[in-house]
Image 1 (cartoon, rainbow, N blue to C red):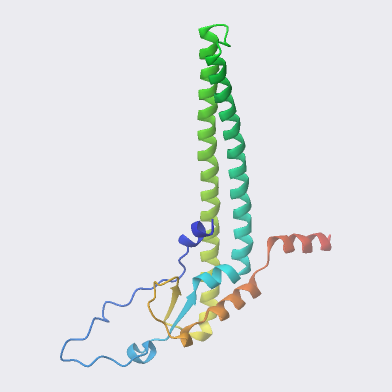
Image 2: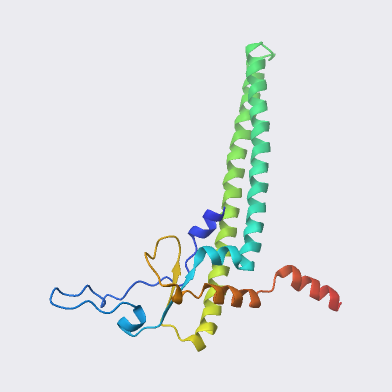
Length: 203
């Protein structure tokens, strides 16, 4: 599930400018350090840390995991029921347990309907889970964008990159603002459960 969620995350990925082409053979390479090189103020955020330490992401991941488990349990139960029906049908067929061919065909048709229902249920549950995951990703992106807009009013970064896995081959740790971002996001985050508790207390 986490892989599903993480794969859809992208909050401020930025490609290098086309103007930053490789130097010609008769030109000296520019000095190391993005800030000195192009006069730009750059920072990056570790996506993995964000996903495991941002309370909103952690809370929603728990919710998605519960829904995924419930869906899997439901499908497993329905699948076991279908398999039991198939086994019973085959056993009765082999032992001439049906009174007529029509009766056997009726049971077989019922099993086929049960199989179609299971397939439809699986598609519906998968669709609901995918929709919920998309909803989470959109909410996460909006949360990040809103916070970064406010955060960057003072910091004035030209680029804030998302670092996930090895998508950035090397980055100086002095450009890492992950802790700042996580702390700021968590400070602003108000879980729905706590909101409901406060409303109940006021009543």
